[in-house]
Image 1 (cartoon, rainbow, N blue to C red):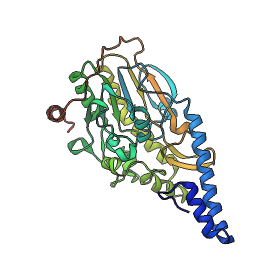
Image 2 (tube, rainbow, N blue to C red):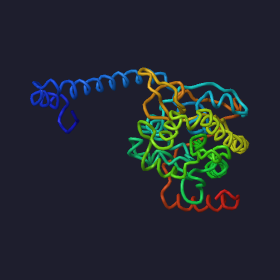
Image 3 (cartoon, helix red, strand yellow):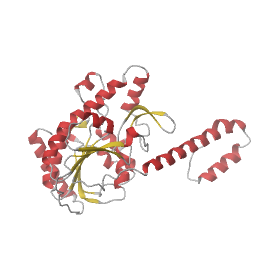
Length: 338
């Protein structure tokens, strides 16, 4: 059975009329199709129930929200050395595309400037919403001279965020680091061949994050299954990517006024089993609500800091954006980041 433009009940009726007297059709086609439908419905229902307790990052009290992409809570808690009070939150999404959709698909964030090393906000097909007019401004550092080894390095993000803080003192600042998400760029990862030369930031805007997070995780999971890659090696590379970002985040905290929170959009799975069907999951497919995928850190770095006065203004026009891009590029080039 396959879906088409007709309502589902008409599809079923047509298939039964055509094949209902054929026992083989029931065994090889109808029953497997029904099982998949029931399984998918049960999965969606359970995930929706779990998502009821999800945390709205945008509605929380912050002036600066620092996102560490794909940073699960247990990794952050055991690795970070940042100041502040750490708690765990349940994210609304298990992938960046889902996180963006569930937070911003029906919301104007015109009091916010988005500094991002992840181009997913441009991937309308994958996000399921057009976010082009959502923020007052978007500082996109995902292409050209900003990119090294298929990613944007943490100090480039921090420098862009510091520039945005000076440029927009009356706006909330949403700063999206790419790490600890792969590509894994540490010396350890390079020595073990984990820096995938085919993985590029542009792929997020064109291929998105599939149900199985295909690509590197698919390859690595197969290597683990075949005994060619210890899962501990992946864990080390994942942790090293976070360690690469933390010094840049620490320095950025000193450059920001107001209340600053460090968190993540979603977590990551490294072969753990996901309920309700005990399937092994790698990476971060959408719609899952497992502790590894939606348990994220919430670190208020300066809980007693005075709040910054912010205002909501319409998104800036393209001409102004081009001029600002040139100024940002010049500043980052002078600092050696681009």
